[in-house]
Length: 332
Image (tube, rainbow, N blue to C red; front, side, top):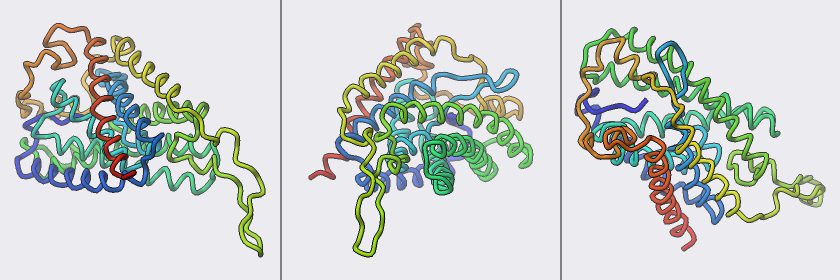
């Protein structure tokens, strides 16, 4: 759902940029409550993982593909405010190094791919896990949260396009087209999110922000006060984070460097809607469209897997540095 330059008028693009900048500023402040010595490097890994998985377009209908947005996944793994920062880093790296998503539309993309999915996904996840507080509810909540976050983001795009799109289009048509195809994309998003969260839960439940209640000791309130009647589960004991980070980094590199060769080449949901509804021509050339990494190496004749590995490394370094800096300011 990466918006290119030219789809929106300058006032709407600038307005979205202001909203996104404000959300990032709030997230920088609030993320301090979510990050610690373990979750800060974990957040850098989450950003790199989302970059890798976003390269893996999957078919959702004839001639149409979809890819992970990642906002809900990041919110569940590292917290909603940190999630906004993680996905924003991914979008910045994609925009400036790979010409994926317009530069004047960066604020729009952060709003649609980072802020809305993280906020909606986290809200839905919290509702589901309040009904039943167990491992199954975490996995189910991950699926439902991610599934719903995608069509909601698509409908926000439709609202903004009606307000300030650069091409005339019937209101009902853009809502129906964006909502319909992105429900299908949302199913894929839900499955990827649920599988990822389930996998991390299986090995390091203490690193899943949204599932921290699973590793807390059972506390019984008595007339004399609170006392622990059941010790914390063994997996809640502090464990080294480095082995998990190394393993996760290898997975991200394999996804970007190997699996990306098998990604669907069909246009994604937004591109397909733009083609079908006749406003694809409103897109303008990317400022960095001639960069050798543009279009994930296609411009420079670089294999997509090599470009993907470069992107994962850049995202990990940039995201890790920013998020660790936020953590260090908190510690100080």
